Length: 140
Image (cartoon, rainbow, N blue to C red; front, side, top):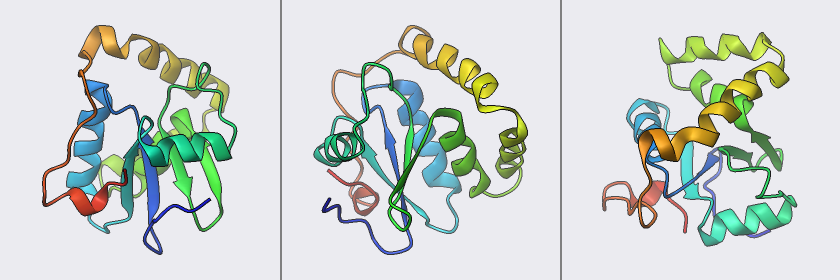
C-alpha cells in the first residue's frame, strides 16, 4: 500500500458527503493542536485503497476509520472516535474515558447515530473540498 502520510501522522477516513462527518472533521482540525491528524474521504482514492487493503466490507462499515501507518492498523467506529478525542486536548480528551465501556455497547450507540446521520444532519452532493490553507491535511 502506497499512501503518502507524513511521518508521525494518523489518518482519519470519513464519509465525505455526510454533514455530521464534515463538521466533525472541522472540529478535529480546530482542536488538533499537535497537528497529528490527516484526513481522507472514504470515497477518495486513498479511502478506497485502504478499504481494499484491509478488506473492509463497506455494506457493514459506514464509519469513521482511524489508520495508524506506524502500526499498519485500522480502528473502527466508537473506538476510532474516542481515540481521536484523546488527542484533542481538554475537555474533549475526557471522552476517551468511555473506552472502558465495552465496544459492543459503544458501537450500538455509534451505529444508531451513524444509521440516522443523513436524516438528522443532511447530506452533501459531493465530498468536501478543503480550503487552500487546509489542503495539506487532506489526501485524495
